[in-house]
Image (spheres, one colour):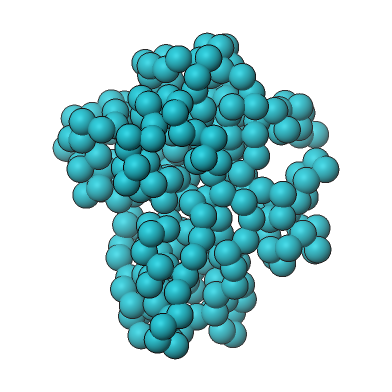
Length: 265
């Protein structure tokens, strides 16, 4: 059931869900997704964007881009929806411990990375330097604006926020996410990177990190495809030899590199 609805941007909302049956708990790993079903409309895959330590509530950040996502963004507190999941794998945060951590997000790609940021801030002593780069098209397209302000002031992490097109009230960086990559600091021999956003951005950032010495098996991407079943049975989300819902959505770049380099006909 929808407990709360928060308008993040003009076309994006965050839905807080609670179980109809008291006592039920939600467990997930940062980076996983659920299948959300709007009765009478349909079902789609949405990343979980809340804190994994809060087992009483689920948060999903949804952008209105089609019939089902539009119906989800129009839900109100008290409405009931169906939830299947969680599905897929998550960010390999255990492998990130003891290393410099690079988190790069573009647009809605911050949503599946936010649970990972919560994990890092809750166990900050387990990670070395933490660099976060987040970009959106315009200032009004930025997600989680209040949290961005908190993270920006934190001495525990370094956050860079950039927009493609600024406005009169924007005093931050202007430029694509890739423009901030040369400025991040990390030890390529002991670092790991988590990236989520538009596919062309992820590919470009991964290539730039490789040029700076980071091995492709230490760069992880969260892929987005048209997922229908969530179990690798329908074939809608196939990418090369992989099914994104079953084998992903998080993949090491070393597995995807040759497929992402192929130009579409």
